Amino acid sequence: MKIFLDTANLESIKKFNDMGLLDGITTNPSLMYKEGGNPKDAMEEITKIIKGDVSLEVLSTEYSGMVEEGKRLRQHGDNVVVKVPMTPDGLKACKSLSSEGIPVNVTLIFSANQALLAAKSGAKYVSPFIGRLDDVGQNGMELISEIKEIFSNYNFGTQILVASVRHPLHVVDAAKIGADVVTLPPGVLDKMMLHPLTKIGLGNFLADWEKMKSGNPDVKI
Ligand code: E4P
Image (cartoon, rainbow, N blue to C red; front, side):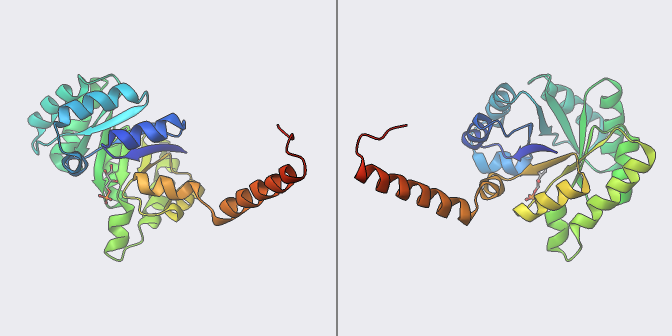
C-alpha cells in the first residue's frame, strides 16, 4: 500500500520524505489555507521535493474552468495529479484531462456509485473520505470494502486513495482490505511509529549497557 501525506506543510513533507516513507502528497484548499503564504510557492516546492504523485486541487466548479486550472496546475511538474470534485462537471473535466494524459484524482467521494462513475470517467485515483463518513455515523471503512469489490469485479485501473484518515487503525484496516493508497495527516503517521513497548525495550537495553560499562569502562562497540 502506498503512503501519501495529506498536507501542504513543507517541514512535515521533508521530515517523512527523509525517512523514505512518502510515495506522494495530497493537498486541498483548506490545507493550503492552513499553511498561509503563497500557495503557488508551496506547490512549486512540494512538486520538487516529492518524486511521486502530488495532488493539487482545482477551485473552479465548472467544466472549462476546471480543465484550464488543471492544465495550469500541471505546469508545476509531471508528477502533478489534478484533483477535481465529484460533480457532473468534475467528471467531465476528469474525462477530458485524462484523455490528454493528465492524471486526475476525483475527490469528495462518499458513495460506491460515485467511485464507480469516477473510475468510468478515467480517474487515476478516487478519494473516499472515510473519517467524514464516520463523523456522521456511517462506516467509512465499509465504503472502502465496497469500492474494492467493485473495482476488482471489473478490473478498473483506478486506484483507491483512502482519504480523511483519522487514526492508525484506519490505516491497518485499509491495508487489510487492500486499498491502493492511504493519505495521512502528519499526526497519524507520527502515531504509527510509536509503541510503548518499543520505548520501554530501548530504555532497558540502554540501562543494561550502562551497567556493563560501569563494570568495564573501556567497553565499546
Ligand atoms: C484528501 O485528499 C483530503 O485532503 C483529506 O483527506 C480530507 O480529510 P479531512 O476530512 O481530515 O479534512
